[in-house]
Image 1 (cartoon, each protein chain N blue to C red):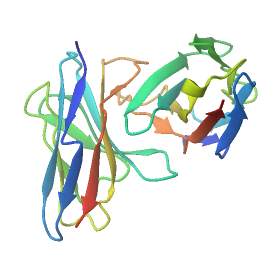
Image 2 (image 1 turned 90 degrees about the vertical axis):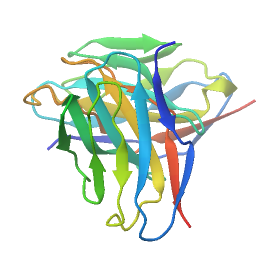
Image 3 (image 1 turned 120 degrees about the horizontal axis):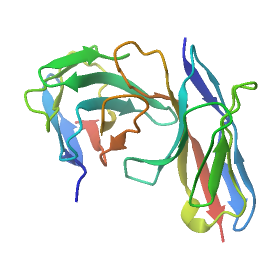
Length: 113
Length: 116
């Protein structure tokens, strides 16, 4: 079955540590997105990528980094510069064009030790 | 700028009650509108969408009509079930996003609890 796989489901970070969240899709989608979800808040866009080897900052990119070396993969690194990283992180993908609905993974919950 | 405003929850209903979750938006151009649903511990699933004024999106008994004159996209269901308990998000994709950005702008979500 086609879909988006995020791993791990739960992740713990120590102070000063970088951590990487995995996102893989086998839907043959060109565009991929990372969102952050905080309790009682909507989703906020961190980074997005429309094509391999290209990505753009979203609304809250500070303290995060991404890469897009393969069409299927869009990993997100939460760096030590992100002072409040505890949140639920959601990866999504879509076809190009407008409007295309986004398909979401099941998310990764990141907590600080 | 672009934004989405939803009614605050939580909303608690009895089974078979009528559901309305209000959603209004501010956007330049002609956005596409979506409702997503999130079950506990999971990602978001597309519930329905509408791409132009007066379109009605529908799925699993839920409906929403794109009202340009009132900039609204209210979600309705005639008879809710316990299994509908979830968080519902209204979202838009701006039409004039200049280069197929395609990202979604979300409301804060409305938690629905349906009691037997």
